[in-house]
Length: 100
Image (cartoon, rainbow, N blue to C red; front, side, top):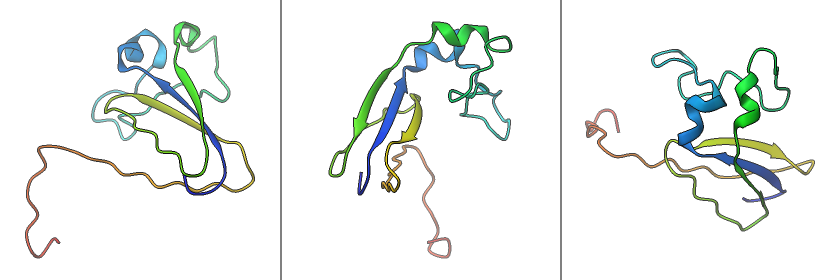
């Protein structure tokens, strides 16, 4: 976190099909949930009430590690906030010199 504060909700991948309603694989929003956690439609997504996560507040200088596959929902708590996100992956193909 660079400036400002934000609340982050982390939900285990074990809860993906218990109530997070993920988009299908190969869908343009694959990796995202269909349910809007800011304004959940409980009649359309009733199992969202069964989802439990862990929340924390991230402040300037804090680092938060989010394991691969975990759901993350963020909410800014200050007028201005900025953070840096680094994604690490394995198994990617080597880039050619032209691509680099």
